[in-house]
Image (cartoon, rainbow, N blue to C red; front, side):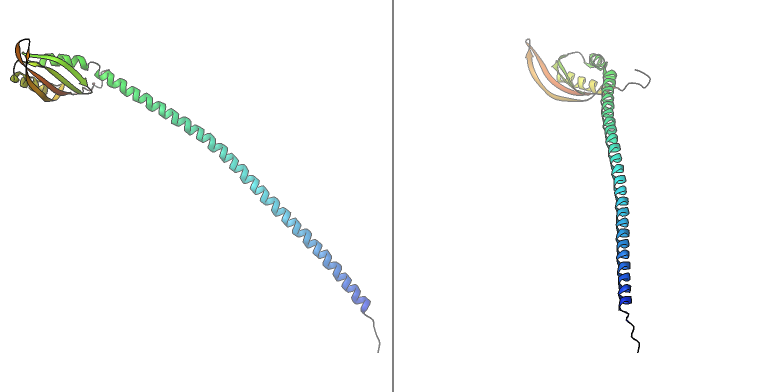
Amino acid sequence: MIRINLLPHREAKRKSRRQQFYVLLGMIAVLAGLIWFLGFSFINRQITAQNDANEFLKREISSLDKEINEIKKIQEQTNALLARKRVIEALQANRTETVHLFNELAKQVPEGIYLRTLVQTGQRISITGYAQSNARITTLMNNLDESPLLEKSTLVETKAETVASRRLNAFSITTMITRQTAAPGKK
């Protein structure tokens, strides 16, 4: 029988396979490193792009917040001006109210009534004075209720008093002013 020694051949094959294994292992390591580097670079680019987008949005939001604050200030100024305008219009509409009130009182106060005080609080008017009789006080109240400027007359009190050696009835009446609205064409 012929003996063939295959040991060096097997040894060479093992050595060759070992080299192939190490080369393949190195290539896989390089490929894995390359894949990791590409993935890391891609993710970093995405993070950087998102951070840039977030910063842009923050700048835009802050500029919009400033604009919103300016708009609120302008609205407050507008509301203040409108409130002033309403006050001026109300004063303009009612500026002759006192003159009309005194004219109306002069027309409605019957003989035998002497007015002592006239106090206006808002739309409410308190009238105090002296009358020769209770019938004249009733006539005054009826006249005030029939007046186009005054309404809701109420007798608060009446009592007998002696003034300058004359017996008179002191009275106190409250009434309300009916606000006159200005005609649309008048200013």
